[in-house]
Amino acid sequence: MTPTEIYEAIIFDLDGTLFRGSKAIPGAVDALNALRDQIPCRFLSNNGERRAASLARRLQDFGFVAHAEEIVTSAELVLGLLGDRGEKRRILALASDDLTEALAADGHRIVDDPSADTIVVGVDRQLTRERMVQGLRAALAGAMLIGTNEDPTYPAGDGLRPAAGAYVGFFRGMGIEPVHLCGKPDEWAVRTALAQWGIRDPSRCLFVGDNLRTDIEAAARVGADSVLVLSGVSTGEDVRMAAVKPTAVVPSVADLTLPALAAITESRVANLARATEGGQA
Ligand SMILES: [Mg+2]
Image 1 (cartoon, rainbow, N blue to C red):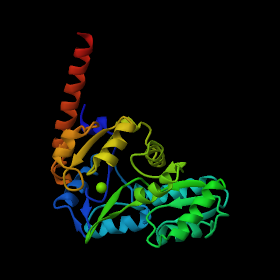
Image 2 (image 1 turned 90 degrees about the vertical axis):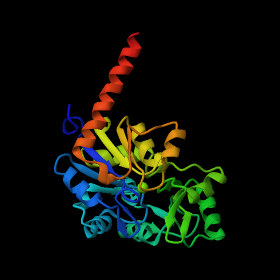
Image 3 (image 1 turned 90 degrees about the horizontal axis):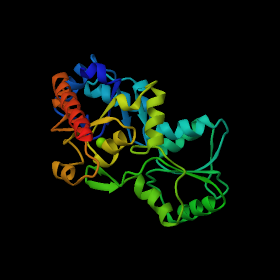
């Protein structure tokens, strides 16, 4: 079987995979635009601040062909989760201004006290001890805790900074677990995004990303193949140490041509055949 027969869709990560900061990964634009003529391409990002339309514009500015409906972010998953419930919530938002504004635009009431019935935690640049106290008291009074994702850090121009996982960690440190985590590798988050795109069989997706802990782990949790690109967070040495390994490793998304995908799927079929033989022996 060819990659076009095997894969229903290729699910790309964004940061570290298609671009880094203000620059596209060299060769990524041509590679992605060529691939998406052959296999449907979608984009799943742990960005908890920006909405799909804003990231679509960013991708288009780099030259990628990408549309808002092909993109799901952690922010979109939070908004979708709260929107699906139908009711308007009282939300204590320990999150970015963009996500807080989007929640308010969806009709939720943003509150700054323990009367909240929902706590949304992402990267909160205004976090103070007093806001943590409000969060703790709201949680103790029964508010549902939702985290954008569990990423420990993210790269900024001046080095690494604490990401949403660090803020979720404050709550975990107080003994409070999130009810939902709206990012990779959370299985609910991944399945929700795939369902939104009408993907019927998650195991027939190929995940492409730069992070073993999020992208490759996400693929493993839904039984999908994965390709690790070495243009971002994880290194070849990390792969050697990892318990969950990608189906293949390539230097960059620029190397992900249709012939390269065919080689990956062939070796995967060969591995499966060997495993079956081993099982019979
Ligand atoms: Mg990434």
